[in-house]
Each structure stands twice: as structure tokens, then as C-alpha cells.
Image (cartoon, rainbow, N blue to C red; front, side, top):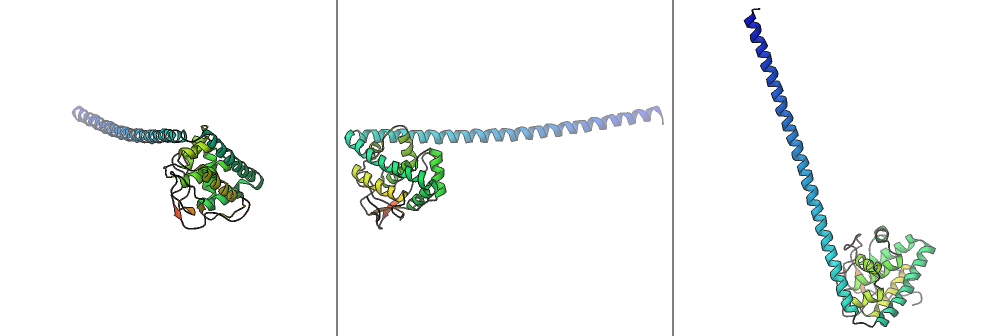
Length: 248
């Protein structure tokens, strides 16, 4: 092999290596660019999700603020003594339901209330655990929410209750007749404690803020967890709202 041929072969080999290296570099740059685009897409999606969550949280907070103002304004027109008396009577029911849960077991109480509010015992138990509420307070919250014209959920009522607003003031602030609220809560408490069988119709409450006058409220939807989600979609039912059995 002559020197010239050797030189040409060496040059060709060099060019081949350079071309391969350039191809690898280009491929590497393309892979890196694709990876960068994917990471950018993930970051963009995460940012969009975070913004959506922030918007939902802000909306929920605004709704709660509006509800607080509505209840406070309306409750201020009702005698504080009347609210306190109603609250004391409802507290008796709350205590009775809680005592039953301790004695007979939470699952028994959950099963009875599930039949009344037309949901599952598991959903009620999950709601109670998430909201850190007692079975008695859960009973009151769902009874009031099922009867209120105001778009309020059991979750929201329990949050307001945890902030220190009494059940009497909450009921008055929703425009519900206090005596009627006490009676309905007492009846639903009897369901929770097993004195009366559940029939899927929450005892009707009267007052300007109530859904309407009728023998019972038909709870047609179940319970959802989470602030602003739990509660029942309600309609007037034609069944017996005054349940028979046990002492009033």
C-alpha cells in the first residue's frame, strides 16, 4: 500500500468517526430536548392543577364566608334565649345518640342513619372521621341540611358548629322554626338509637327557610365527603314523617 493510499484511508476513517460522533451528538441533543419538553409539560400540568385547586379552595372559602354572614344576620333577629333553649334540647339528643354509639357500637348507629339518609354506613363513617364529628352532631347536621332551602351541606354546618356556633343559632340563621327543628332532631335521634325504624324520610321542619310543609323529606341522594360536598338532594315525600315507636 502506497503512502498516498494510506493517507486517503486514514482520512476516510477520520471522516467516518466524525460523522458518527456528529450523529450521536444530534441524537443526544434530540433526546435531551424531548426529555426537556416532557418535563416542561409535566411542570405545566402540575401548575395548572395547583391553580385549579387554589381556585376551588378560594371558591369554597368565599361560600363559607357568605354562609356565615347570612346565618349571623338572620340569627341576630331571633331571641338569644330561644336559640339557647333549642340548643339545649338538641344537645340532649346529641348526647343520647353518642351514648348509644358507645354502648351499641358505631356500626349499628351508622347503619340506622344510612337507611334514613339513603346512603351507606361506610360513607357516613368516612364523613364522620374526616370531619371529626360525633354521631349525634352528624344526625343534627343532616336533619337540618335535608330541610333547608339555603344551599347548605352537612359538612358546612358541622364546620360552623366546630367554630362555636350553636345548633340553635344555626337553625335560626337558616330561617327554621326552632320548635320544629328540635322535634325533627329528636325524631331522627330516635332512629339513630334504634327506637324507631328508618324509613328514608327525614322528619320535616317548618319555617320560612324550610323546603316546605309536608309529612316528610325524601332523601334521594347520598352523602359526599369533604367540605361543600356532603349532604342530600331533597324533595318533599308523601310518606309518614312522624315515625311510630318509642317515647318522644
